[in-house]
Length: 211
Image (cartoon, rainbow, N blue to C red; front, side, top):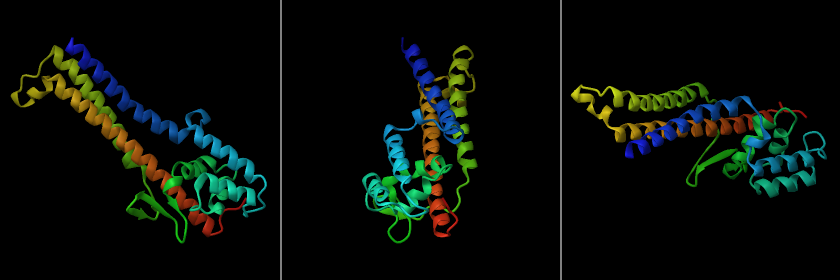
């Protein structure tokens, strides 16, 4: 009975790991209202409606009030308005809404990673290495899952690799790889978001954003 439980757990772990590759790919390439949290969708609709009453790059009183309701008093309404321009919502508005509790625009723009740790957004973020890490960890989880089936039929005879015959060890390795893939995918999502927020802020201050 325990062997079936172990294989079920391995299947779940491998599926979870491979899902991280799918979720990263989907987030990069598709815009789907159903995939976004309901709070983000509602905030986007509210801001889009209020943005219609804005003139040029100047937020209307209604837009300012909407920004205060959604973001609080610590985010510049002009930054939000720039993000709401057509064609910029996925690239800029969604990251702003996802990280709204971490943003502070009084003085210079800072991101609160932790209550005691604030930095400016990164100037550049290369997604490639982290995305490779997500894929590598997911494939590693798949490898350990495959090993659990292979060693059941063909046990490893080398004493130094005897651990490969232990389902508990392989299950633990599957979940360790899956958790690394999950952590890497979340890190990629977070770093990309705060880079986009910083990019938007720099372009706004440089006067490169027109409506």
